[in-house]
Image 1 (cartoon, rainbow, N blue to C red):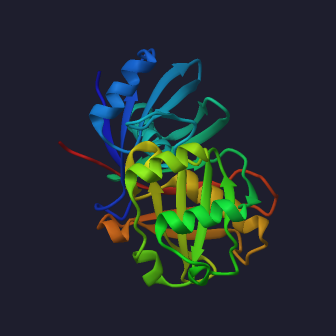
Image 2 (spheres, one colour):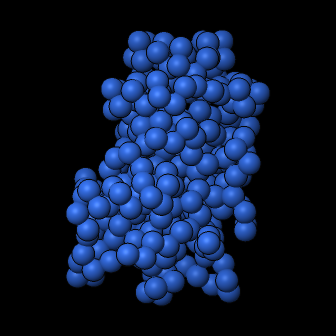
Image 3 (cartoon, helix red, strand yellow):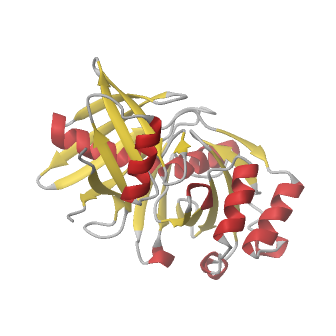
Length: 277
C-alpha cells in the first residue's frame, strides 16, 4: 500500500509537520492501519477512501486512532489536489464532517481546512497543578490574559499561555509519564503558547498521547486555540498566525481565520511540501 509523505504547514521548502497519506479504495483493517502508522513513524498517518463525491477519513498515530488531526488533513488536501485537481473536498471523520481545500499552482502546494466546531472551558485547578508538575512550570510563568483552559476544535487539548519566550523554550517533560497522564485526562495534546502580539503566537505542542514528545505543527490545536481566543474576546481581528516547531529546528507556519460567531468553524491554512525518500 502506497503511503505518501507530506510535510504540512511548512515554512517554504523547510519545516512543517510530516504526515503519512494513504488514499485507497477501501480501508485496511484497524490493526493494519495501526501497523502502517507505526511503520511510517510520523505523529499521524491519514487514510482516505472515496464515498461518492466525499471522502471517508481516519487518522492514526503510532500509538492509537485519533478523532481529528489538522496537519494530516492539510497533507491530505495537498495530496488530493495533486491527484484530483484543485478543489474543496468534503471529509467524513469519525465524529464530524469538515472540508479541506487543496491547491497546487506553479509548484506551490497549499491547503486550508475548516475545523469542527470549537468550544472551551476553564481548566480545573487540579489539572493545572498536575500540568505544572509534569512540565516544570509555576503560576508565575503564566500569561494571566489567557487563563489555562481545556479547548476543543475536533479533539481536546489543554492550553497553557506563558508570559515569556524563554519560558516556552524551557518546556520539558518525561514522555512515558506524559503519555499516562494525558491518556487518563483524555487530552490529545498540551499546547503551550507565547503571545508576541495580539495576532502572532509562538507555540509548542506536547503529544505524548500519540507517542511523540513534541509536534512541530498542530492544526487541530491551533483551531481550538483560535476558538478559545474568540471565547475570551481577545483582540484577534479575525486572524492569527502561529509559529511552531522553532525549538525543534522544524519551523512551521499556521494561519487561522475565523468569524465572531461562538463555536463556529475555524479556517486553518498553510503550505505543504512533498518529502522525497
